[in-house]
Amino acid sequence: MFIQSRGQVQLTFELLDTEEENSDDPVEAERWTDYVDRYVNSDSTSPELREQLAQKPVFLPRNLRRIRKCQRGREQQEKEGKEGSSKKPLDNVESLDKLECKFKLNSYKMVYVIKSEDYMYRRTALLRAHQSHERVSKRLHQRFQAWVDAWTKEHVTREMAAETNKWLMGEGLEGLVPCTTTCNVEDLHFVSINKYRVKYGTIFKTP
Image (cartoon, rainbow, N blue to C red; front, side, top):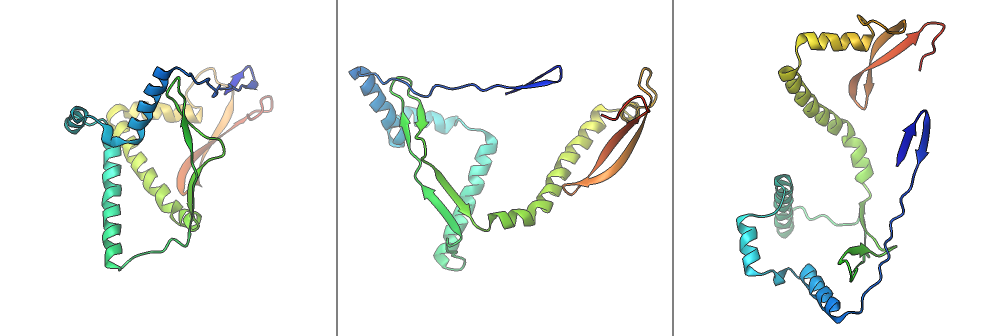
């Protein structure tokens, strides 16, 4: 955590205790075993709970849309794979499946084992990211700009927009240090932005 106060910046660390003593109580051990079995085995879910989840499932709508989209894509890939028309080898993919986890008996917390990991990397991913960077950046900016324009049209009047522009240019305000403000349009990550530069007199320096 960074803390800034009076021109000074402090960096603080918080150490988390991950070691917990396991209990030898047979009751706790039995509860722990039942908990792990229910966690790793979805068939142990009671019929009442399944019916409740079917009527009122617990998930976010955006997650459901993503899951359904992935399922449709997976089904399409399996269909194409069976037809043999677009079956792609995994020669350009590196993967490792060595992630391990353990449960704490007292708290039922699941923690990951140190130096165990899963990863999958496609060698062409970085190249494809560079190729699609401009297209993706422009699309996301257009979506964000459309939202900003709609919000501005509803909540910001012309007078408010004019006052904001004057404030940015340092015009029409009393009590300001004499200065000259310039606005230049520059391109940053394929998007045009306004870059303001303030130039003070000989007494004051540009921050």
